[in-house]
Length: 127
Image (cartoon, rainbow, N blue to C red; front, side, top):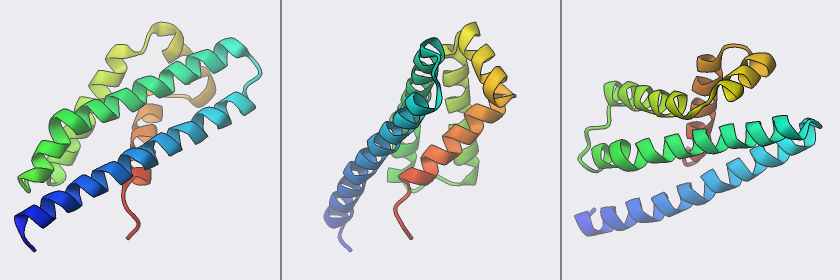
């Protein structure tokens, strides 16, 4: 397969993944709005979801994509990407958000880690 064809394929897959991510977050927001009656909690959960989305997209854009293009995205790079993502997300969550996560789900880091993994899973093309 030529390099030009491979680059085009990567571009197409990137576009598809972006659509899938948007769709997954739309579903998550809809579920949150249905599940919680307290509008302050809904607002905070929506903000938390957006922070997680943005963190994943940021790490994907600045770290993961460049490594994938050079063929250097291995298991160690995956761990580093997750660490970067966790740091970005934790840095943006305020105390009220962390308290709500603890109240509803328990440990903040475990919750964030699970959400990152779930989103990345939904982003992967069907195999």
